[in-house]
Image 1 (cartoon, one colour):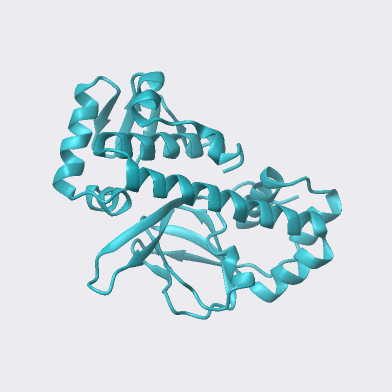
Image 2 (cartoon, rainbow, N blue to C red; image 1 turned 180 degrees about the vertical axis):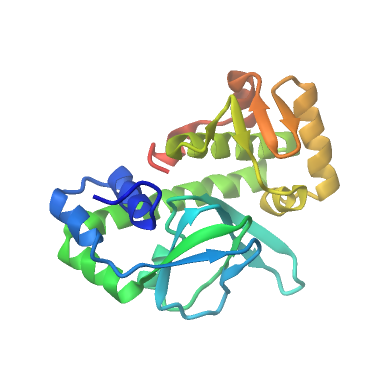
Length: 242
């Protein structure tokens, strides 16, 4: 059995959340050759156009996926926390179509994609769990498109915070009563299509509504139901395993 807080523990936990694993599946996961690396904040893990031969597991810290326009404008398309497999798509798509970057100092584990793919074929439960994890990613992406495209500034930011709280609770990183939100206002802006100034005003407006309290990067949701209502947040799209 994987020890707590090792990359293997988080990989096993993630796949158990997204699929039914048998004891033999868990044993076989333990044979994967993981290469663990401690990396700094803002480390580029994968760049758009790369041809990766490894998949990346985030074992500690926070990261994001992003795209850049030809003029250099960045759009963050997802935030990630410990336990997330950041690029399962590279099992079948050779060239990276987006970039991956750490937001904080982080621990990552690199898994040779040939080994992970072989295990997915040999152990169907693992393959199904990886497939379901990818489908959940797609569900989250669709919600983010709606968030950026059709919600106003306050709703966008509130929704992003609600999703972050729900996902943190799922992996024991905090709850609505108290959680750390390590993203800068610039990063929030890159995720919501807002300027840093607009993000600052929006966070102050949420404070003023009495929905949450902030102390630098430490947040407390004062009224979860109110924040969810402001955010139009329904966690169904997370499928209880994200």
